[in-house]
Image (cartoon, rainbow, N blue to C red):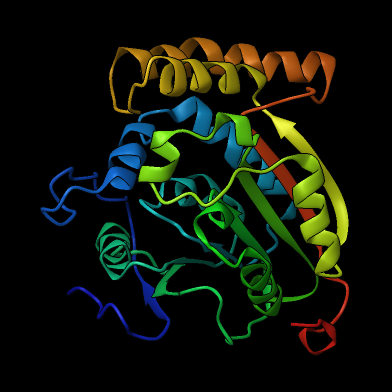
Length: 266
């Protein structure tokens, strides 16, 4: 099957196994965000942990905003009937289409937030997306319009403004969040807050030291391997034993859509 057009409407794709990532697939121009995602694609324990946080709220047909390389899709596929992957960048959309070019469960499309589009998805997932959008309030309203009443908005955002550094800026971050700031955003959108909490306390310490103190980039190598195989299991185990940490690398926010899109102010 050939490549789908980057601006094509929803197109179902058949799939047996995902194609391996090719580091040369992106455009030849330097893309710091791609470098980060390619490095993190090797962090299997981190990805499985974070993917599991959304699993109870997925429903039968979730939509992911900002799917990037599509790594989280691999974790969610066994638990859904249909999965829509989107990205704002047409080059990323094409990469997703190429990777999942034989999958009947997956739809790949371009989506730019804010948008006037509507939908009836059983959940909307946005992992590390809102911080890239200048008008995050309008972006959140757009997510609400893509979901049916009773479904969930599932957000993961980078935590704590003090951790903002050159890497954040280079990868297009406008901000970092706290529990209070993300809770206020959800409340202003008339969503019912299910849970807002920090995740991965050790990850925040490791990120701060490596990127802000040591000024290192996130690339595949010994540091990321040690993070994934040593620090992630420790951090996850600590949260299982002691519960929600007082700080973390990420803010996890789960909120429920309680009214039709027409009843939300914009």
